[in-house]
Image 1 (cartoon, helix red, strand yellow):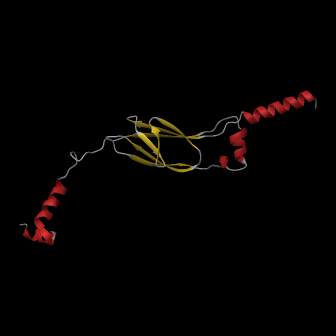
Image 2: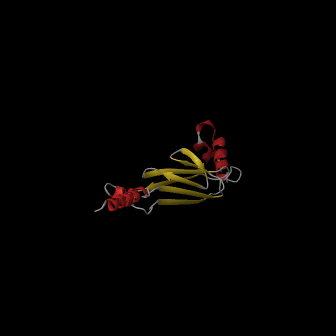
Image 3: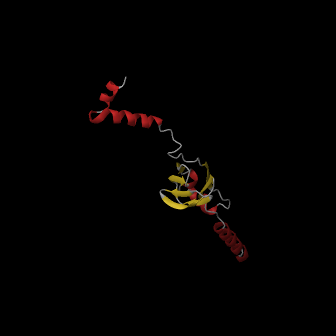
Length: 147
């Protein structure tokens, strides 16, 4: 093999190694309405729409909240595959020129929070009236007095 062929092979090998794409785990969070605060593992990370890079596989806890809307709590798991275990990861993450990202998309429809004014308080008020009539001895006395 000539010097030229050796240099050509070395250049091709170097190009192959340096053009490998590291596989990424990404999480896309979208909400309706947009602008909700996003926490990942109880740490604030931004507002929707949001794209996050997840460094390690495993279970993550996602909390999405917006003023006037019910908060949403989700568990999201990034599982380890055979592609991310040694020795396969050398090829799949470093030498493979094709990127194989693990992308999870979470689309949430936030529901408006029920205020105390819209909640039906009739059962609570009836129970409070019964306890008020019962006096210090408790509700058993109130049930005897009611006709």
